[in-house]
Image (tube, helix red, strand yellow):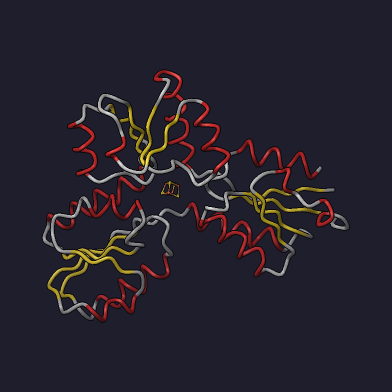
Length: 275
Ligand code: SF4
């Protein structure tokens, strides 16, 4: 059986960097706390927990004097301050693309722009970004949300890193109707879009696609949906042992795609299991 792996696929730059930083810190520190799961992949979280990672739900649960890892989504300045007050050592794994969105939020609001933030209000990345806003703002998810906003002198627009560029363009275009001055900072990272495009390309040249990634990973779910919509038979597993051998039979070429939070070791196990 032939196996073709999508390109690019699997861990994005920001998560790769965060895991490497965390592993190095675990080796030198032994135990590190993280507020929220550092990666949407249960198998990788378990591996890191075996190295000493302790996942807690919020900063209240981090004991004074401990080390805490900031995941790729980043944290707000308030949470940072509370941790510093507890004399906690901070190991910063904030993705540089998220950091850029935080800086733009701070800069535009300081310059007097009413800030429009495209994204999911309850997502930890947006919660962190909003902590940097120093003036009025609104979180919106689509262009039609602009209808609820009165005319404003200056509007600044930024986005959660994983949003669609087409939605940001629609919002920027339609904001012309409600503001005299508009400043848009495209803070979208293309990692998720590139992985989705890779699945669409792969679908045309294989007899079936196995998508590997956590069932709690939204970007893996999206890859699976794209594979299904392509008309190519698709299967979603978290680990190689979940492969259905009956599903494989009769297929000459199998494609593999992995979410942006699926580590290389899980992809390799899957490649070997199919061959
Ligand atoms: S998806 Fe993009 S912004 Fe998010 S962690 Fe990965 S590289 Fe960074």
